[in-house]
Length: 494
Image 1 (cartoon, rainbow, N blue to C red):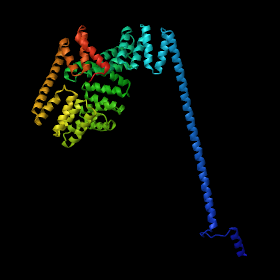
Image 2 (spheres, rainbow, N blue to C red):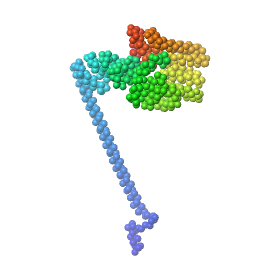
Image 3 (cartoon, rainbow, N blue to C red):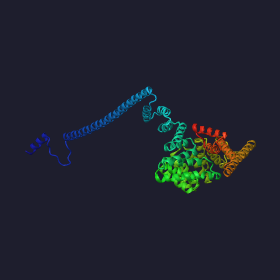
Image 4 (cartoon, rainbow, N blue to C red):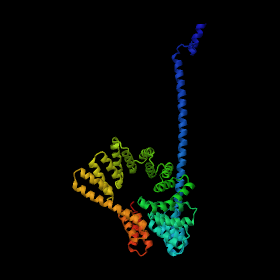
């Protein structure tokens, strides 16, 4: 009976299995098929999930696309409406050219669309139709400035301030345009008037302080000029300190405050304020450069070196940092570092071939390394950048002599003597001018020397002083006009 039962079980596929005994082939096939089924089910679920995710993603993208298209259509509709409105206003002006209200509407619409030149045309027409309209006069300066015509904007603001002397905006615009034209003394006077009319306006205070700082900075940094610099620098410092107190997180204010202190030879506060500016505006290369200069003056060369290395990484195309790096490497007196100093100095001259001090630095490094030919080329490059300085002539005289070129050495020495004499003469004239501030002849000599040295802001300030003292001085008046034109077209070289 038992054998019969076992046989039936085997026929039915119900054979009894011992634990660990191998399964028959039919059972293994069932398990494999079951596993495949589970896998197919899993794959099916994953595929469905992916389809679902793709569908949701495509729906989201479709929604975003439709939203963008709706915005575009809205812009197109609005633009079309604006064009129709502009065309309507232009037609109305053609029908009634003296209608100021219509011209104001058109000018306002054009300015909102940043079409400043067409807006300028309308405002200039309004100013002609209503020469006593204060708003039109002020708007004329604003639109000219928006068009980039700084000289014409200055003229408009000046006329407005003359006719409406209590208009603070006109004085502010006059100060801003004169500042951009590098006419710093005039800018400071206009800003002072604007600040008196609106003492709560930080913009007036900022322009006033900035113009005073630039006015002081345009003169040579010599003891002879200390008295001339003293008052404008004091004004700048007071105003910047107040601005810094009211705006503790504005790096630009700390930067200019630091420059003011540096010009006043206040090393401690110069470094402190410039460091704060650098912390607030770490991406500004000009701030880092001036900070390093201040740190070197205060003998903090370690911090200066760290900032130089970081700045070269941030600003690999800024020549000044290679100049500073070379200068610091040479200052160490380690001959082994001279090749690195020369390479850094050379990079500076390649990036900024118009700066004579960079060539001087390269020449000095080459001399220390006894590379006479390279030193000669460097100092000759310095003369190409500025031929009115004694140092390159002095160095070349010595280099030519060592190279056996006596003729060129003699010529260079002669020019060096002439440049030294010119510098001494300028210093003497500056000293005499300070002692005799009413002497027109001394002022004229001084202004001419500044002009010849391409120190146009300083020359302009002195010529302007002469004109105020002697309005009928034709020569000084002519020079003022010529330098104004230079400012308006290209700005002065400093």
